[in-house]
Amino acid sequence: MAAPRQPLRRTLAAAVALLTLAAAGCGDDAAAGGSQATELRYQGSVGQVTLPELAADLGYLGDIRLNWIGNVTGGPADIQATATGQSDFGGAFNGAIVKLAAANAPITAVVSYYGSDAQTFQGYYVLDGSPIRGPRDLIGRKVGMNTLGAHAEAVLKTWLVKGGLTAEEIPKVELVALPPVNTEQSLRQRQIDVAVLGGVIRDKAIANGGIRPVFTDYELLGAFSAGSYVFRDDFIKRNPETVKAFVTGVGRAIEWARTQPRQTVVARFESIIAKRGRNEDPSLVRYWKSSGVAGQGGVITDREFATWIDWLADAGELKGAKPKPSDLYTNRFNGLPSGGGGA
Image 1 (cartoon, helix red, strand yellow):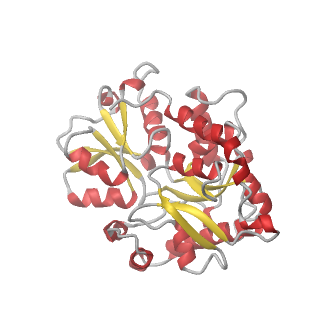
Image 2 (cartoon, helix red, strand yellow):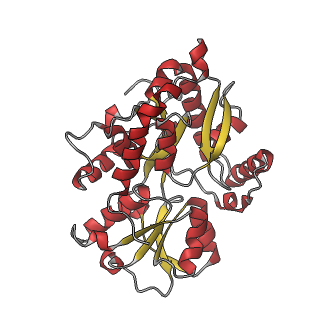
Image 3 (cartoon, helix red, strand yellow):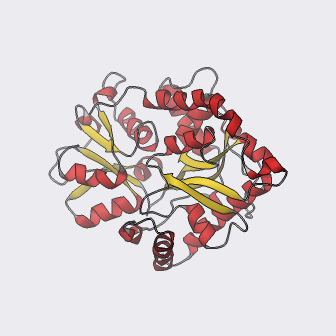
């Protein structure tokens, strides 16, 4: 299955085109009546617990209620839904946020929610007997990942460039979009040559044996926060206290998970999955190790956007002047000690 040459441009351009149609619906939150929103619509992830869900269960969101409207498999689709008013917040790889914001979507990143560290990272895995060892070995091969135009693709292409592949050679590496829960199986059935596996899905696949990493994003880039939650700018303007409660609650949930014994966090996740009654398999969360978020309480730094601004510009995905990282995010709603103030 061949990947489109410019998936991020086409996918996010479609979202921007919908903004005008959705504008009338963007003001439908509770603040329209003069009070700030107390319910936030969001998309979840099958068999996993998001940080806002954890924050809500811990009581860190105060009076704010979460309204689950379905599941999503990739960040670009999640922030599209936010940009077009179908959800109130969404999360994505920071490079996808750069692209959507550069296309004039009125969104702002407010808190980091995932990243890579020594315990939690995205790896590019092959079967033990695979001849693939380096970047050139991927020419003519298939790489399966959760979504195109996001974290996995950006890291892969950064690695390929550092490995000496030319602009003409890189498109010969075929990218295949697969649901995360099916990626390991596709690798084992040899439908793809490389599987991008992260977090609990990666750990479960490793426990099953027979695979090895070619490289990881942590090895390539070190510890970093990779994705952020965004709100629409009009929502933020009408509901600043709601956004502050959300961001601070998510930040507290990050620190709770960072400081608790792993078994305590896993048990909480299993309890949340059982209570929400979505007929899910809770086995994935038993492999949880960390959120991977680099900054305390999800505080965002310029580096976490600058890396991907440069990548997109070099790939010809940004037109005109490169945006400043500080124009894409804010920490002013983060009430933790290292948050607040700033951009």
